[in-house]
Length: 440
Ligand code: ADP
Ligand code: MG
Image 1 (cartoon, protein in one colour):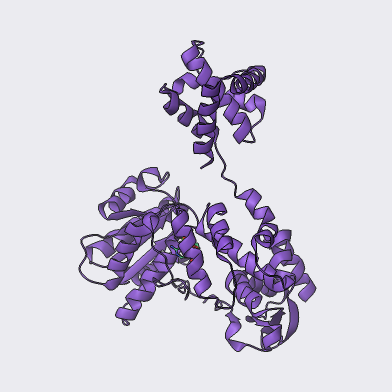
Image 2: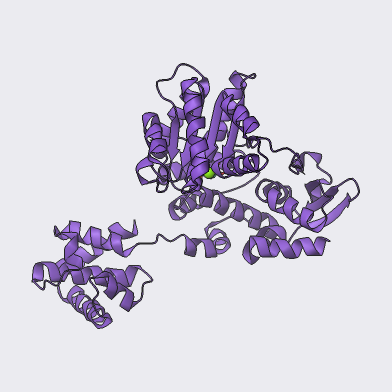
């Protein structure tokens, strides 16, 4: 069965992830009849990492192979059995559809959350709400890109709120789960208990609400849930990957309800915040010996999201443990080769056009216009040149994006700008400046 589980993990997680994290696991034993499996990892670190990041996949894969499996424990080989590393399998679904919140992740606390310019407003709002006093706003709406800390903040609100008011009913769930539970309740012709449970929450948190875009009956139910909670003075926290104005496929009445509350964005972290986050994560790992230049390097190069940053750090730590090597800059670059390539900032043609037009103070429509006057033709050529240099787009595609021009026009523009850069210091300086701005 273990071989089958490994195969299916390889497929579901991808070869690279599998090789990096799951391949070193060995089957340590278990009591299949009582539903328990024990896996062993070569280090405590890896055991811990697998437990926090792959618990669901592991349980899932085991259950697919042996439905009787209820628990998958990951222990570290050098510390023998460590019962604290047990991974609880989710409880079996009850026969009658009921609404359960999802358990809060223990690591996602306010203490573990690093505050910076990018998330200050969201953090303060979350903290204030969690403290449970009178509030001028309801709901709290958190929005921002993937992996920037929205879910972390919501769980932190839940922990804090519960700590202060142990009797309070706190429910956290993804919008996906909300929909799933609601649809199941409808099928079972029992929406009553669904409503009763959600609408009596003291604090209800729904994560990733963009998921119910276009789902009409779920939105209808969601809207009534919101209304009922708000008018009863109960707290509501909602997140999405976009601001209310940009949430397509969500009913206007929901959007306007959202914008009545406090709308707080969680932005991409700047270098300083990324740096501080790494230091914070390392505080929790006193045995990890990571020199400052590596911390700087990670903070500088892994900028797409905090999740990626965390992943990169853990990968470096795990590789160091597995290979028994010291963590220096060279080792870090080696361990992260793939990730560094993938996380290079991707510039879009649209951004290039926008920046170039700002720089030369011309309208963006000139990028696609037929005008050949020098004051628009030159910037247009520069933009095509930058599109060729900074994106992976093909020449015909670039041509299309510049008013449907032919790819030979793009080739001509690229050559022309190359010549000019060599001959004209001013143009060269313009191009360099634009490149720097675009590459961030
Ligand atoms: P989102 O829900 O916005 O996609 P998450 O809340 O899941 O993002 O965050 C992704 C990861 O990054 C989590 O492991 C979280 O702990 C971490 N993280 C995000 N922001 C911070 C922060 N400001 N301080 C510490 N960790 C953070
Ligand atoms: Mg999230």
